[in-house]
Every structure is written in structure tokens, then in C-alpha cells.
Length: 145
Image (cartoon, rainbow, N blue to C red; front, top):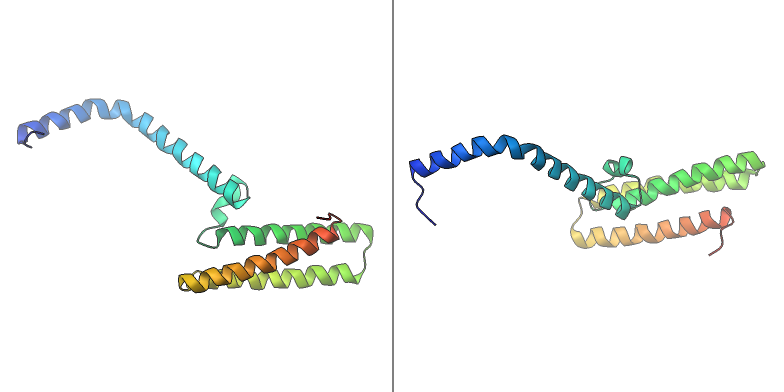
């Protein structure tokens, strides 16, 4: 590689002035496509829509996405129960599960600032509790596993 001289630098700047405006739109498009691809992959990994992917970030993003999904399912169950005229037992379950999901969301948020070992064990405990809530939800939706 040659020496960097003022003459060589002027030549490079001249080439960039000519080619830069031609290449800039292609570079911007490439960046945009890369960003879209990344966002779609992240949304797929979290199990949410691309529009919702920005709501979930950090190391607990997947857990927050699960909690949001479970909360939406509980709202659906409450509506279904109201249409079917279900009793207090279903309403009590939904209220209890919503409170528990709120507590779990708080635990995941708190775990963001914990040392990695404690964060992992907290996330593991939250995953276990979410699994139990989801199993109960599926049973109440009459989906047996």
C-alpha cells in the first residue's frame, strides 16, 4: 500500500464526490433491508408481530413477550366466559392469573439489573411459572396436551 500524501487524499476525495451521490441511495436501501430482516427475525424469535417487537427489549424480552401474550389470552378467556355465562370461578382464575403475570413482569424487570447468575435463575423460575399458567389456560380453553 502506498503512502498517504496530500495529492492521494485529494484524488480519493474527488472520487468520493463523484461516486458518493450515485452509491448513497443503494447504501441506504441496503441498510434498510438489513434492518427489516433483523426486525423480522427478532419478531419471529420473540413470537410477536413486527409492529410489536419494539415493545420488548433487554435480556428478558422473550419473557415479557410471553407475559403479554398470556395476558391477552386471559382477556380472551374472560370475554369467552362472559359470553358463555361462566361463574365466579373463571373470573377468580383470570384475576389471580393477571395479578401473577404482573408480579412476574416485575420480577423480569428487576432481573435486568441483577448479576448474570441470579438473572438466569430468576428467568428460569419465571419460565416455570409461566408454563404452569399457560397449562392452566389451555385446560380452560379446552385444549388438552
